[in-house]
Length: 389
Image (spheres, rainbow, N blue to C red):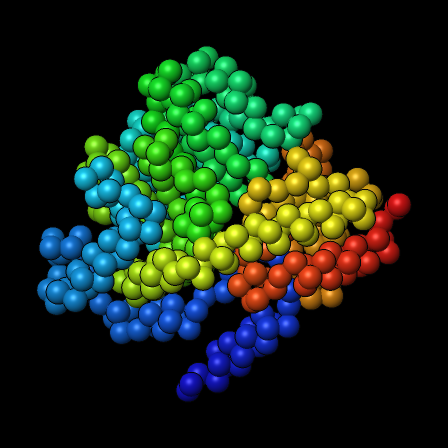
């Protein structure tokens, strides 16, 4: 590489990643094939529009790449193309969600979603997000007692507010979502049901988490978390919503799609179809459950008592450690987590009461239960030196 400064930083980051235990729930490691597609000559091509309807010439091969990605996406999640379509052009998850709202919900109209402080995402209407400024969001959380979703409460909110859309999905909620109950609520009030499966898409693909598609109208997802792909996104749509949402993505929000990204998405989708990926997805959940259980045994409170997915939250403030302090103590020992609010947190999001832990990346690196137990012992040893009991 001629640019020695960037080459040096790449090597330093490679060394950091190799030497760390990565427990960031939203991170993973891609294959060499995904990296090769990302760094391919497709990065040179401008391709505004959709296959067969481009605004530039020279897109014959590009069209094949995008169509292949779409075919693989529908096949992976077992979706009939008579009922479902998929848009693989969103640059990432946030614009994907924004595109859906802009297409289907009038500005200022009501949307019901999960609050960021109890496990939702910024783009589920948080006040600092553009999504929270353009629509009237009413948020649900979790039960104070169980720290689980309270579907009766969601129904009450939905009946009272009569939103145009209900959005479900999480960044920091560890349990299975009951999509059937949400569908029933939406049917009662004639609302659209959108599921953001960015965190658990790979688990769905691997059969380790229930699929949202039988109940949802729209499913959005990133591809770089449990799906083990590049940083990109997809929108799955029942056909009646496809025209409006496709126009919202392009030309509404984006210009030329990143074809190198789409090629890399196609690669990861093929990888996720393998029997080995199913084993991997199950192992991700096994590892998360073991890690949560082992920390629980050692006196750390796990939010909702455990996990059904790849992630969970640990209440560190219950033992006198803020989430920020816990994150810094662990990072000093090359264990990477992120500070995170816990339900009904009284502390600042910049120094909250907990940490979020995920097992997707360590599972990709080959770790199994015996390795996870060692990690739990190490985490406990590092943190309890500074805990108040």
